[in-house]
Length: 81
Image (cartoon, rainbow, N blue to C red; front, side, top):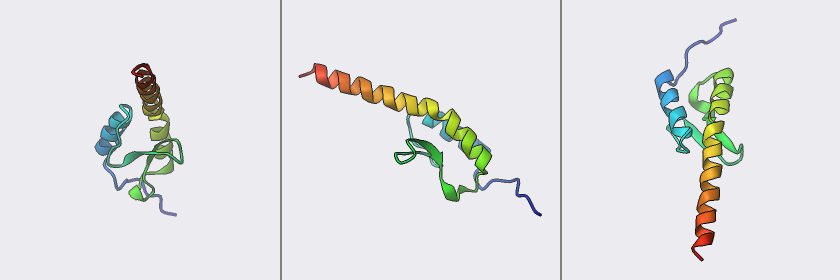
């Protein structure tokens, strides 16, 4: 059986998107998915499952950033009233 070892997405692009995600910003391939409640790599990108899982785990920092940022914004808005 043939095992595909290359990806349709360059590794450098994934690294860039992970750095964006850790700042709470969607990238070209790694985007926040409200249904999954986290950052995910698009299904049609040709990225292997193990790499997808690793990216999801690393991007939990971005998820946490988004949660803290939203909580702070809410708190600041409530203090302005």
